[in-house]
Length: 232
Image (cartoon, rainbow, N blue to C red; front, side, top):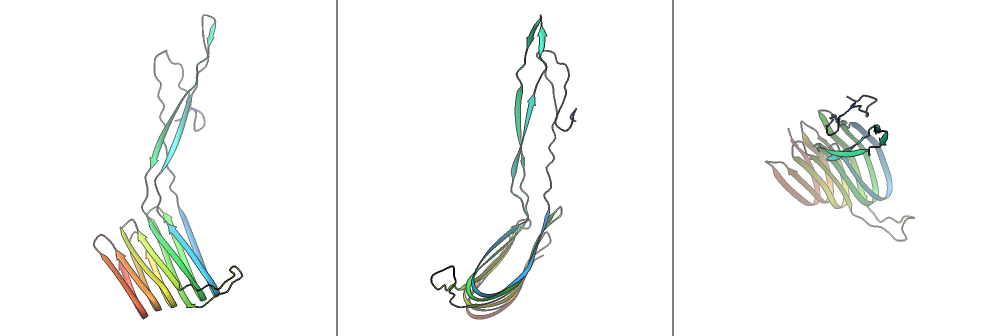
């Protein structure tokens, strides 16, 4: 333990050529947070949305620096000043597997969404959740931002990745002139799951992956789709 405060050690007198020893213990903080977002948007215009929420943590490094100083030494009426010694050591903090939610939307025209997103990261729980309703119709849009009309087919792309369980579910609507969708998804230590009901004029894609499952499906046209997909 430090002699003074939390970073000063007094070793005491030492004979020439001998060694002293201190022990430094590093306690890594457990990063915890909660995130909640709820709201709705309605109108006509251009929509560009990109959201990514991750309850995991990449590895990082903590570097500690130690400086050793000594009192001047007087020998035969001569005073000698000892140059301070400096040492550093670096500790790697391991990565922590978690869950990740990705949401990407793009399109022009009439648009309505009601959305509820949450993320919780604490000891024993790494959870992301989404509940979202969308109604979008493709139309030309002339905004004050651009000097020309914008026509962008609709894309609604939602992906859940569970790095704890090595599972992922990806549901996407692309190139659509009409989207009406209600979707709910959860990823945590116990499950990775998505349920949705949608009416689409365009492309609808589904991808499901785990160690034992690899499913991909693409549907094109005027579609009514209802699905419940998940791992437990």
